[in-house]
Length: 95
Figure 1 (tube, rainbow, N blue to C red):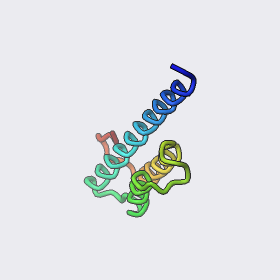
Figure 2 (figure 1 turned 120 degrees about the vertical axis):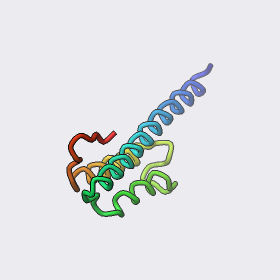
Figure 3 (figure 1 turned 90 degrees about the vertical axis):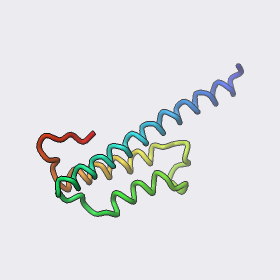
Figure 4 (figure 1 turned 30 degrees about the vertical axis):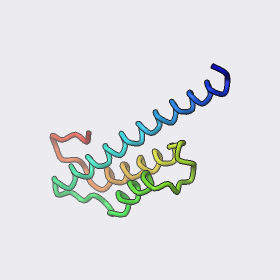
């Protein structure tokens, strides 16, 4: 393999890892919101949750889509927002 092919393979692997992290955070966000709703606790503004989901799925981003760092940041902020809206009930875990 030449240098260009090696760099493309490395870039594809990094993009795949970042996508996996973003999807994992999305799953945690959905599970946390579902846990809070089942417990009757506030989940914060709806637009925070749906905005984070839309930001991940829509192609218009601050950074091009193979670089999911901005998407990961938005998902982390939304997850922190849900956590600060109300504590998790006793005996439950978020993910």
